[in-house]
Amino acid sequence: MRACHKINYVVLAIFLWMVGGMIVCNAQIAEHVYRTDYHINPENDGALFFELDNISFFKNNEYAGSMMDGYTLPGLWVQPKLVYYPFENIKLEAGAHMLRFWGANRYPNYAYQDIAEWKGSQFQKGFHVLPFFRVQVALSEHVDVVLGSLYGGSNHHLIEPLYNPELNLSADPEAGLQLLYTSKHIDVDVWVNWESFIFKNDTHQEAFTFGLSSSVKFNAPDSRFHFYAPIQVLAQHRGGEIDTLVDNSVQTLMNAAVGVGCKWNTGHPVFKNVKLEVDAVGYSQQAGDIWPFDKGGGIFTQASADIYDFRVKAAYFTCHDFISMLGIPFYGTVSTSREGVVYNNPGLAYLGLEYSRQFGKGFALGIDVEYYHSIGGKVLSLDSQASVKKAADGSFSAGIYLRINPSFLLKRFKSAGND
Image (cartoon, rainbow, N blue to C red; front, side, top):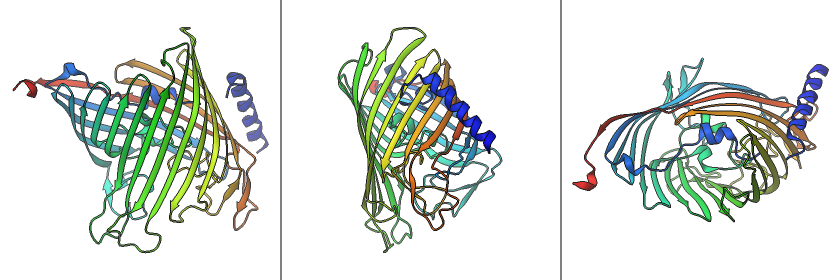
């Protein structure tokens, strides 16, 4: 145990030296590996493509505290699909989303995102498979409407206390309705992810998540010093008018964040930029009692520096009664591994290093190493508190990710707009 603590302190010292006192924004891996460019190219008018989208990953989480249990994710997801552009501003995609963890052969048949316990009562063999279908219309150069499979995950640009980047690997594709707006002064992403549909006399709950992610830009993003203000909201509703459940039938949870940020674009080819952002986060349980607190909040201070193909990251988070629906549980007060464990005013220090490289359009590699260390946070309630450790006492995470997204032209038809 003493040796482990010495290793933890050595790693912490190395990262502190690397960060040089800076205090993470959306990761470089998110930009190069996780995100998908949603813009429609008018030159594809009338074209039919076969596209193979894939992320292969190996992520190991060594969690030492009592907030989360450690685990490893070895596997891949792949989306084979046909992509057709009947008009210069319309894009249709149809295929399948298939998830595979190496060493597993049976998969729950429904959504992977903690919607209700009934999910997983049926199984699939070999892969976890879902249909993939997307209809996208570019109403103008500023506005896009998406129906079906959404541009989700890291495309929403949510901060980590609201969204865990690991869900880009393991969660089902979001599906529902999405509106994307971008302009000189503001970017807006509004969506509804419909996670659970119910029929009459069903014995489970309807569930959907509403999201809003926007960034107000006070000047051009490529300015020497770019200033912006992010505004983010997540609201999950469980229930439904034809819900047959009686006890605690309706549940509504909310997370929100508002902040200010500054990015220094150095203009140097190696030391590229430095970004600093401070966000106030909030939590509210509008209906139901599935969480122990009805409201809470916190402060998330984050920064990053891009140096060549590396990103050095650090953050500090402190909160009171804050609970995240989809974020990393370390950014909160409730343990996900020990029932009844709740922390009083916990703090968290985070340090990380990423390497990301693009080999061409649709091909990218990402490697990251992360360290979490809790600061304070006494146990509020637990049946037996004797063996409880800090929330994230020297916890590590490391992963490697490869995005492959080739596209093959099958045929170019006469544009439907010219008929």
